Image (cartoon, rainbow, N blue to C red; front, side, top):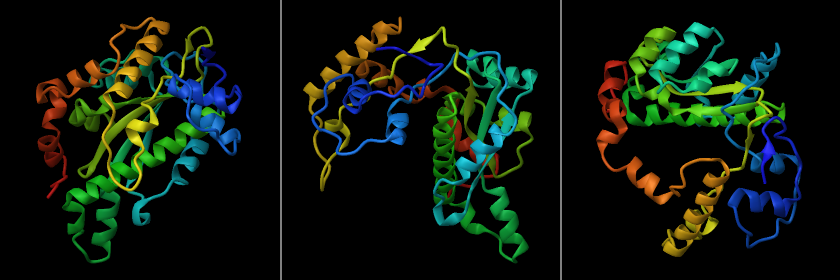
Length: 281
């Protein structure tokens, strides 16, 4: 069932919503249901936008939602840059795999791991901030940024907006840093397009792995190949409905992790990050 992306808030019965999320009947009955659950399960990526600006105040509201996410030790080790300038979006798209929806979206949010603010504060208090040199601190920044961004996604969808994460922002991090004026200790971890979905382009909810593949109790379990094969079949059905190549899931992910060469410039990310002020001890 395709729901126009212009109305991400369409309410569906719980069982139907869950069936759409997994592409199959589910083995449990939700004991409760509410609008928040309905919104979360209705999520889909939006890559086609109307030429309509995001209203004044919405950006700030999204950031308020982002700042309401959990933060490790309240370090708040992230920042975000809002980009609306068309020429800058074109340049950032060029550094990020030339995703056309970066140019189409009225708003691009670039989410940052920001350890500079923490180091500046540590130095002002008479410390070197050596703890920021460790991989743990980099992970804290990445996790904080991801938690904040996902809050912003939910807030955006509640307002009828659509979004798409841009992992390609890590393709050329130094060029992105130069474009955005990022100092040492700050790096773009991903981007996010935001805008009103084009109602002409309907988008299905993409099926996720069955819970048997991701939910284990008490200890890690073995995933059933039969369950994975059944998921492949559901993905092919989804891909057919979206006029995409019917490659399923397993072969796609296998190619995606086949070698470091597949990662292209991202295979050198550790080396690049050290040049950008992240020692990563």
